[in-house]
Length: 168
Image (cartoon, rainbow, N blue to C red):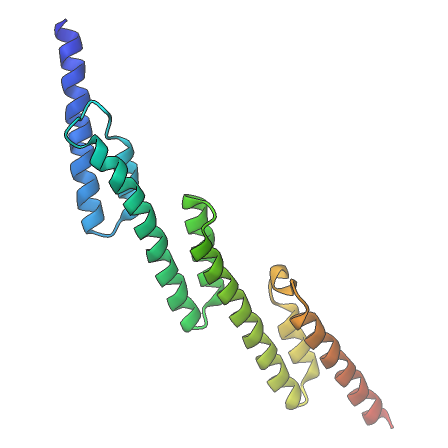
């Protein structure tokens, strides 16, 4: 009986410690660590269990919002790949979320537009090879849709025409 009482005391003590660690992690905006700690709060801790469930949902929401803000800042700094990596990491932790998917779409759209603009500017200076190289160096997933493929076709045709004109 003493052993059972000791085990129950230990479970409650561990749960309370986890709850306190979770609160500290939340205050430091370390939402993933907070979630991990909250999962360790068991029903044996009758004082904190219900609140731990609520705080777990709160932390999930706060983590997603935090990652959306980080990814959005990357987009604003033209760091599109970092934005997409941030979304991928967050979705790896929380699963697919509409907010994160919207940021991914914004990053991809912005990245496509930036690459196309850079390629067009490079081609305007007569360097079609470099312009085509820019379009070739983007990740395959940016080829979804037709923007980059269409730009590449147009630049290739212009390059070909330029070569033919130089030959004449």
